[in-house]
Length: 170
Image (cartoon, rainbow, N blue to C red):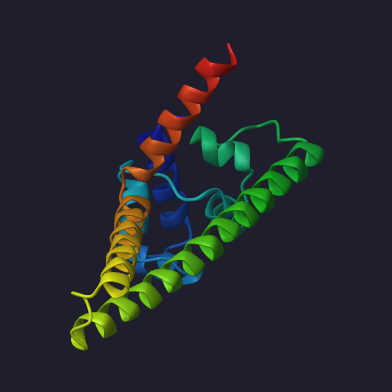
């Protein structure tokens, strides 16, 4: 896939409908900065947004991903399969987000435990010292997970993990 070609095609489709980037972003529920990045070929929209773009501009998903109009349209059955893949991907993403949300709530609870122990001055006694250390370690782990997950390197980490798993399978 050529991101720049796809971006030019999105820009062309947007201009055909006489829309600004801001108007398109409002329709899709994203920032106008995201639309600008797509059109400049810096990054790609999520797959569910690719489907929304294709539906809105009345082009096939194949045309959008190829960055040009096609004379022969994609088979409806293939498009249904792509839609199912997108739904699966969204469900998977939501599951991960729910798990992360729970972990962050536990991280906040651990921080509260640590803060209470420190404010009461109990961190120098045996059991409380150990509890404070465990809570602080958990908080640090959650901050680290949050930083990694929300960074642009998260996708690279996932790709690296998949390459390692493929090597183990061989």
